[in-house]
Amino acid sequence: MRTRLARLITAILIVMLCVTIRSGTSEAANLGEACGGAANITCNSALWCQREGGQCKAADAPGTCDKAPAFCMQIHRPVCGCNGKTYANDCERQKAKVQLDHTGACPKPPKENEPKAVKPKSKTPKSGKQQ
Image (cartoon, rainbow, N blue to C red):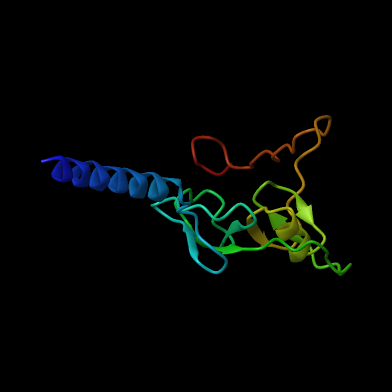
């Protein structure tokens, strides 16, 4: 009877140990693996999830885990990040871990003191008849 009880306790402890070890492992994706998407898979802490360009508002867009560059060449090929900031080149955007909106500079927001454009008055009356 004692050996049966000892075996049962040992088996329970082994199962508990396995569950503890398994729950402590990271389910984060590694370099080159899929991330984001509907399952919202995250990348390991040293990586970031880079998605296809132009998907700024797509919360469930899939991507690929990539390593952000530490250094970039000083090449001027502007790109617009999803944060509305223009980066000197795509490497600088990736270094900042910002998703790509589009190539080229971001549109400049209107200045606060700048008057709004006034539409010229139409020569057609509101009734739709020409005068």
